[in-house]
Picture 1: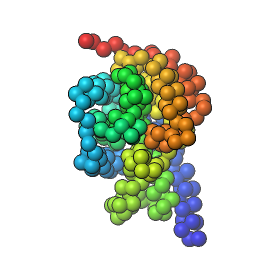
Picture 2: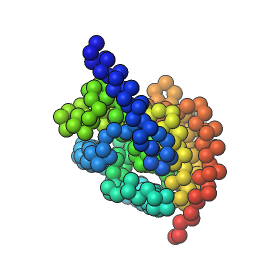
Picture 3: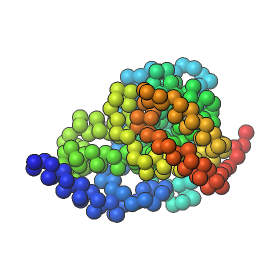
Picture 4: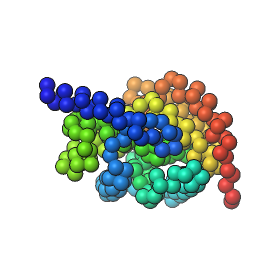
Length: 270
């Protein structure tokens, strides 16, 4: 009972603190109680582990496509941040993009600090470079908006009953790592997930479209991509949908976001 009361009190405090910080790139009030520098360190450690435990693709064309999409989108992020006085939010980011060979895993993720992984299993759904930009842009959007920080803060408060989360992370490394992996969709194929909220998904859709457009991609490609992903769902949804719930209104909302995104379009010089 004491633990339940403690958890409820922490949630009340969480709500009280939510007005003290805003989501980077959107301005929404939220509670993110973990220093981003700690999450970036966790992200780098987790990314190294994933690369050690996974097989990277040896397909030169697909690898080149992933790197090309990554380069264009990361440049779009940096230029957008510079123009909107958000460079400090990305000062610890060191972008890295890898294609992991696993045709059974339909997933991709971006960890704090700009560590991106794409599984080969999602490529048949993305179909081409522009479709891949939809996915990677969406994942980068979650990272730069610090959605994982929100989810980790909530879970650590509930499970460990403390608001001094920087100390909690140091004193509970294994539990923190498990929550971190779940919050960022790493290991979704094992059923360990913390789904993004509808608000977070909408933010990532909007930011992702802006980044796509800024990188010179056709944002209209987002609509058929999400239609294909929805069709792939069926009775056994892919890993990507387990962490990225697809509300029925998603495509309609994306259609509303497209005109704004197109105002950021910048063609790429060949």
